[in-house]
Length: 216
Image (tube, rainbow, N blue to C red; front, side):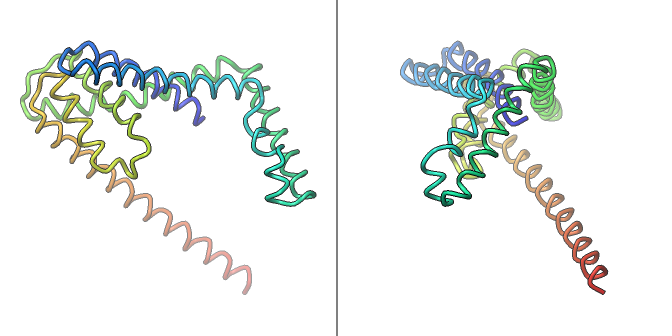
């Protein structure tokens, strides 16, 4: 499932890289860096797909000497056996259900693309005249820049900068609106995180209540 999500995001991100390069608003060296980044990102995700289809993901880490040294000989053997079982299941899934995997990628792409509708509504509420094609291009460009900033914790500053660049370079819009949109996204993230924490606290309280009843 995570691989399907990564493939969907990469496909949208590659489209965003094309939008950034073809915009003509960026320096040639920046365009080259974006193109190279998109190519490397695609190669990495496709390489992981290839390795997973061959059944060589978990066993690379679980069947080596490092695992035996870390867990001991006996436990290392169990880890290696479990890794081989995981790889066998993954390889069998790709061999037997390729259409299901393709459907998962398509559904993830559709789910991610809802962000373009969110962006369109934001601009409509601000009475900013913009075409659907421009909205899609700005969304894809922002997604590409987000993917490049995966190593930034919580994408602090990176998400804001990505929207400012996408709004200005690709959409020809005021970058300040991109910053405002990123703040809206931050509020959304905080609201979802608060809801998740509340649900987790409720579930934890239920588990403790059940455990107390079982002991009693």
